[in-house]
Length: 199
Image (cartoon, rainbow, N blue to C red; front, top):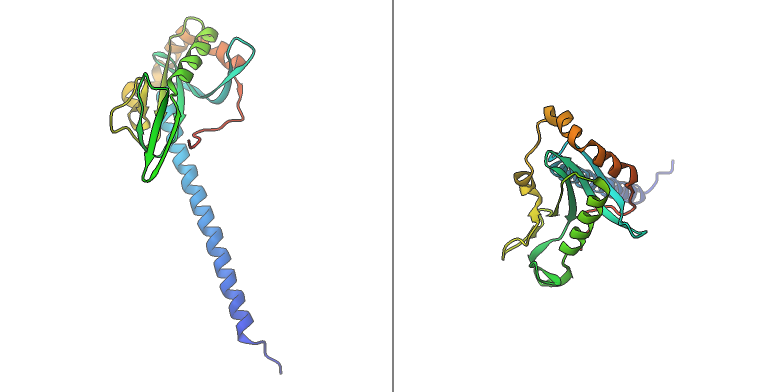
């Protein structure tokens, strides 16, 4: 009676175990990233009653702006520019570029305030009399050792600016803001650009 050598069986078992381990590790990372994204979205959207995520808003000149979040809050419409940047960020209102230092790595990105102002202006033009505000929201991987530039907030403090709302106020808010919010919803189109995008 012939017996298969133990070595190929053992190799097969080891390779099978490694493959299962790799798949399990990938599924675990995917699940953690998905859960973190859900928490991030909730931290932003819980500041209001309704929201639009990853939309294109007409700029009035035949082009569009990508907007990460538009949130209908008790104070009006909040435009959120979400940034996922790791490291210490050095930026200011008058600086053209902001610098990121993460260990030995150093790079710059364009001051996002100008882009935020453009998005706010486009939303104001579309939403009529509804008040519009904007914030540049950074995830927890960013630190600002020299202080936060204007309209810049960490995601975990956004709720201090825009506390979670009483859902009972929803109809009252919509009475004041319905026309502007509906007009904005009508022209906002899905955007292929999803954020946060690492810089």
